[in-house]
Amino acid sequence: MTAAMRMAIRRDKVRAAGGCTVCEYAGLFLAFSTAGWLWEVALHLLLDGELVNRGTLLGPWLPIYGVGGLAAVLLLGRFAARPPVVCGLGALLSTAIEYAAGKYLLAVYGLRWWDYSDFPLNIDGLVSPLTSLLFGLACCGAVYVAAPALRRAFGRVPRARLRLACAALALLFAFDFAVCTLRPNSGQGVTVTQAADDGLRVIEPAQIGLLLQNLPK
Image (tube, rainbow, N blue to C red; front, side):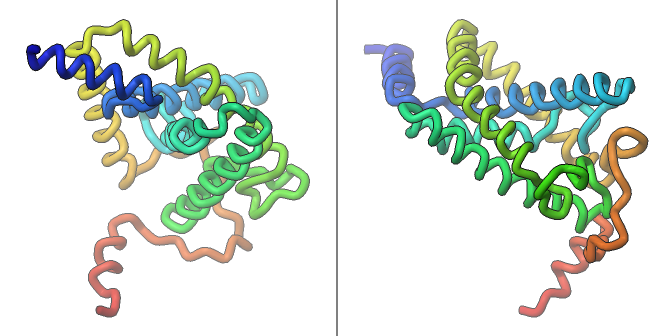
């Protein structure tokens, strides 16, 4: 049996067990990130009549959607036989991710990339029951529709080409992420200035390393 045959058999076993290769996980993350960007851009265009590059990065991707979608596939797939459970847990998972990301962005940059202050029962304007429910439904879409369709599409692409495309996109994303960590995408239609009562100290990105060095040991 050749090495290629052994690798093919091993890959088939992984797929049968419901797993993905590293390249496929990266592809899912990037696909969910791009889908989130398209949704945000389209929603802003519909509601405000402006075509704006939404999110903290310059490229057509929103990593918070990538993290949420991939986390839903990894953590909620085991509950696939019970859609209400997937939806409920997806709502809780999305709420935790969104709140943590919002607090981080406020603390580091003093800016909001979303604001739910006008939504009922919101918490700090960063999460709300309505948006959590919508994201719970989106997690169902990721688990039942998007992930299986994407994995079938990945399976039809020659492995070498898939790896090359995945590596190229991952490098581009990493470069975008590194650049925008220091100078994130912001401005009219993208961010909202930090409210005075947020009670958070804004930390300049350049000071993070200095703060870490001065921590008590």
